[in-house]
Image (cartoon, chains in turn brown, blue):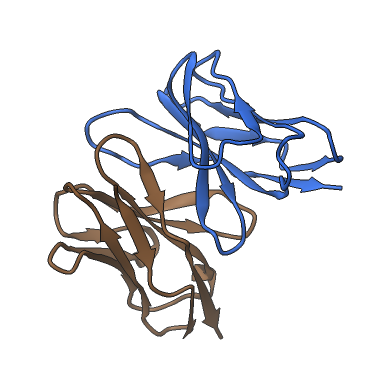
Length: 112
Length: 114
């Protein structure tokens, strides 16, 4: 069965500095991988997804992630943090079918 | 615009009372899901349905029930058997294909026991 581990429960950065949110996955097959963002008391919004095409995936709001099979990682990055990026971020893995497994989430704080 | 609508946004339940959370989608998605979210625990799957009149238990189905009488609707009932129902509940939907394109989420319902 697939699983995902988000390595940091909380990340704090200053506005204008790079963001790195780390995600490792476990999968028996070629997985699909996703990053979602959640602002307080809101639903989850899809940031980007990897489905066996290009390993570097670009998403919305300047975020991107790189699929590294040898490291079983799918880390989320952004070159320059903005105050509006403060939110909870979820890494998600899916094997066959539609079964999605969510990480526990990483809370991103952006300091002025 | 297509999307998922959850209602109500906030819901208060008295001890021993059943309450029903609504989830409607107009995306023509086959599959629908209910998740429970508690602080620091991510999302946990309650029930899911991939076709009308059929649904499956997720990881934490005890104390909950669902129905799928129409493709567009997947209501969740939190019964009195659920001992700790205070949480944020999220509904999602997806296309059922060989490649997973991800879920579309509703904006959630926050349930509080009073």
